[in-house]
Image 1 (cartoon, rainbow, N blue to C red):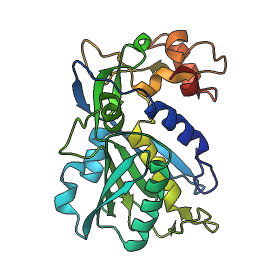
Image 2: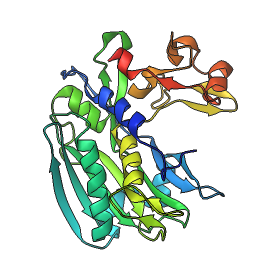
Image 3: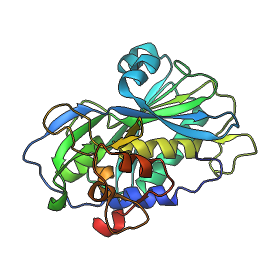
Image 4: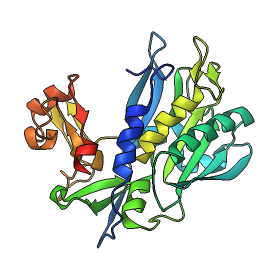
Length: 288
C-alpha cells in the first residue's frame, strides 16, 4: 500500500531517470502490442491508497478507453511543456482549470527529471464515467514495443511507448499518445494546491498524477502470481512468450548479487514466494 499524501517520489524519479538515460539506438525490427495492464489507484477501507493492476480488457470494459474522445464532453486543449531535458505534450479532455494547473505541475516535475529527444505525449481525461467514489484514477502506456535492450546481455524486452521512442531516436507512433491517463472528476476530496501539502483527509492531485505518469513511462512489471506460482512475460502467446518487460530485468531481492530472473525459475513457487514478500528492489543505477 502507498500513501500519496505523505510519500516522497524520490525513488520513483531516480529509477525512471536512469532507465530513460540509456543511449539512443536504432532497432532492426519491432513488434508492437497493446499495454496489457493499467494501474488503478483506489482507496482501501481505511482511506489509504492502493495501486491495483488491472488487465487492459477489464479497464476497457470499465472505462471505455477506445472511444473516450467521443463520449467525454468538455473543453479540449493541447499544451506543450519543454525543458532542456525533455518535452511533453498533453492533450487535456474535459479538465477544470484547477485540475489542469495541478496536472501541469506534475508534468513540469517529470520534464525536469528525465531526458528524451522525442516528445512524450499524454492524453489526460477528466471524467466521472467508469469511476466509483473510491477510485482516483488510472494510467498506463498506450503500447509496448519489442526491442533489443541497449545492454546486449539482456536480449530483447518489451518497452513502453515513450522509452521505445527514446531508445530508437524517433517517434514510433505519431498518431497516438504514449500515455493514457484518466482521473475521477467526481471525487470530492482532491487537493489541487501546488505545494503538495494537502490538509488532512485530502488527496494531493499533483502526487497522484506523478504516480500515474510513472506507470505510463514504464515503471511496471510483467511479473505476477497465480495460485502461488510466480512468473514473468506472458504478454504474447507462442514463441517469445517469456520475454519480459524492461523493468523486470532490474529487479532483485536483498541479496543484490543476482536479478530475480537469474536467481529464480520462471513459473515457479520460489519466485511466487519472493514476489509476495517485502524483499524486492531495483538496481537500475548499477546496470545502465
